[in-house]
Picture 1 (cartoon, rainbow, N blue to C red):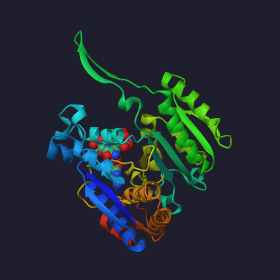
Picture 2: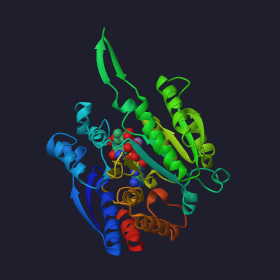
Picture 3: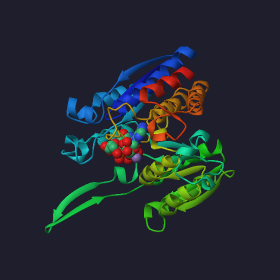
Picture 4: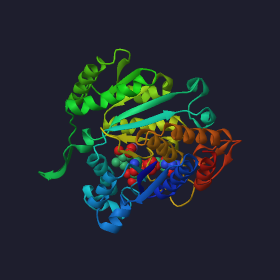
Length: 360
Ligand code: NAD
Ligand code: IPM
Ligand code: MN
């Protein structure tokens, strides 16, 4: 079958890791007889340099016209790069927020899974790791603090800044439904994470999640406060199946969850809306500290491409093949430096891509 993929390499390590995901997709195309047509779009700092804005309307239109979008990462060294001397709405990250909003991608799925082979890269002690863990973070992506009013002003000689956090029940309901649907295909356990002891938005979140839960009697729902969740993730990660949470909490908790899988370079993500069009990206950023060195881990991006095959193209067998190829490469002992441990074999970004592509 034919699929149009909008590729957004972005900044920093973005182009390096997207090139490897593309290699793997090309291997899938050859093996299974599909055709992926790529259109490369600018977003982030590279778009600021070329067009003066982090995302043009043309790029948005091209993304909307594609079957799926595969993204590397955007942004530079925050506070120490020319891209951050302009208004917030013109900075690299504004492009990412804009594309998520324009494509109405309210559901961000971030699976955090500990590969047996990566136990040595996990910073937790063996008795905590136990049999390992396998969780999915369902993060609301187009509401909350990210999209509230942001304002900085000076009043009576005092500088003040405001960021508004709001949610309406519809926004909560649709992500909750996705969360429960995902849970139905897994271990049927949802932990909804909020700050209901302090925030009104969290109290509404809890109510609406409970209303949705009534439609899923087979799923066990518990509520957990976000500060406790941050602690539980390193105390007993195996207790989590589906974590359902709002935008900002999901951002923070997913970076934490990624590290217990060995590295943030392993954490893939899919951002979905009501239809088939999705945006697929690693959960990590553009890693300016290692950009251009050919050492970034491309696995999160490769696994994001596998999610694209599964969710936007309905190519489950092909997605399984990519995931199996990643597992095989890890089993054979190949590691980028972020997941390296003694006795394994260190490779760079491009070699890792080659190894995975060859095993599809
Ligand atoms: P980061 O995720 O880019 O990097 C954090 C640390 O993890 C760094 O030490 C980096 O080297 C390492 N790391 C990240 N990805 C890696 C990989 N694939 N392989 C090996 N190591 C990896 O977070 P940051 O440093 O806080 O942010 C850098 C820039 O990225 C900022 O401009 C930020 O806004 C942006 N950012 C973009 C996205 C995105 O585009 N989705 C996500 C997060 C951050
Ligand atoms: C992520 C990133 C983004 C976010 C930034 C770059 C806007 O951290 O995708 O996790 O906070 O959503
Ligand atoms: Mn993040």
